[in-house]
Length: 163
Length: 450
Image (tube, rainbow over all chains, first blue to last red; front, side, top):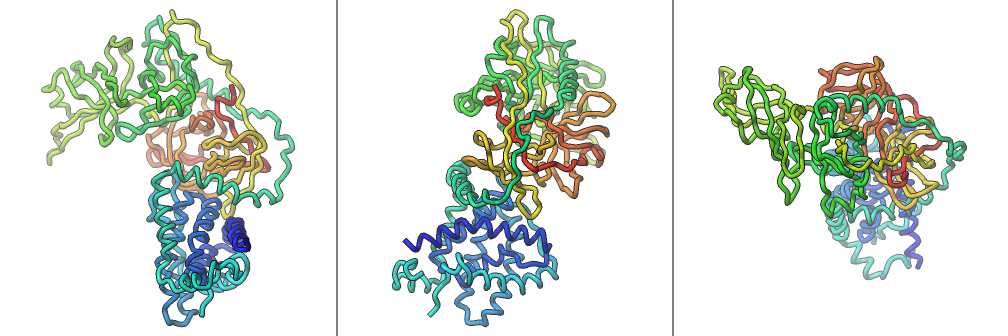
């Protein structure tokens, strides 16, 4: 039953992940690692493909609790960029470069999706595009945060084993 | 960790995926849940409750003084509103009818011109028994007392409803009224019926007494009044205001309009209504109206969610939370409404949340009749909140109260002060005071209050 523990742990940590993102935003403003983007980076480059549905659905639920909007919309907002960028992990390019580029792309994609996804009864809160200094700062800080948090439980349990 | 991976062969196959097929399946399921919100609520509500269990470990202040009864509803302002709602109708409606004031709790069923066509009242069917059928607000005819269909009855819980004049109920004929107006000083009778959803105004005129006279109509806005009508038990008195006449057509280069359709723009915006008058026959048995019960509230713990603190995670101490229930600060000021409810907990969104629509009462400092309005929050900065109104209002100074915003969000709760009315009366700026969120009160729906 040891495989249950990581699943349960991520289920309960997901809300705190985005609470921490909110607290970071309140404390540090725009010059901070975006934990939503950091989660997507981990999912794109380091997570086991089979674990992605559980990771993304818990993240969507936790993010909806903190920021508002329908959880299904948050799953789409986080999951669609992950699915789009997933093939990047097979590219034979320096990982640092890939992570940097993906962090920048995700920092733009997530706010764009918040505008594009359907606005039904419980729409996503509209996010603003990051300014250039915030984008550059995020491109450096977010991959570092993703690398660090990906090596800690519970995400550590979901890492892909490369051969 | 090794045990988590089902098998080495399976794990290797998993790791070699180019596309995350399981993730695609999840995205498909999420898209389906957006189309089926009831299913989403049933699945995600308990999941959110379970996920939030650790949040209850966060320190929260004790509910000291939570049982204290506060004067949360501004009864004096509501009395002024009632007086205004009654004043015009008394002179028009026959002497054999007596008025019964009702609060509008909810508006449902978007109909003609996209306006809600059904109003849910705070009275039960028993309380309005023996009614004359018509529902007014001041000297305006709003609609008729409606019979709920089976589907509606289940969701209404015995509450009485009003079908607006622009309602077109399924399987039943719409209300058609004989009305009168004046064109170039000459009186003209016309028939008014519900328009369609895409029409610019909710009432259309299918039949005119003198189409040739109407074709020469060059100015719109003439008031339209009811003519007496007695059919199928509905007695419509003479002289109730329906709205103003509108002409839809094509304008040529000289500004002359070729009329294509005639409409009536209602005198009252049904989205803004908080109080209406149901008229009962004097000969009917006395109304079994329940005594006005004080606002029932329950205390709850509140955790302000980051980054803005405009969402509250609520943990109940009493009965279950209801979606749409009003949330008040410890000082009795209106904070917002419950937007997500689960077994034993919920999330509240602030009044300030951009995009959220509210029905409000503007209570004048000069003692005049309160203004009912409906608007959507455009932006909020600091204590200042800007609302875009659906109908223009005159510039007023005074305080802002809630209107009827749902079954558990009654009219008369304190929101703030009017800072300014701008953009020709369509932009309302509200100054909201600081709200004490040491703990909050959550309103109970009316059936729990009785």
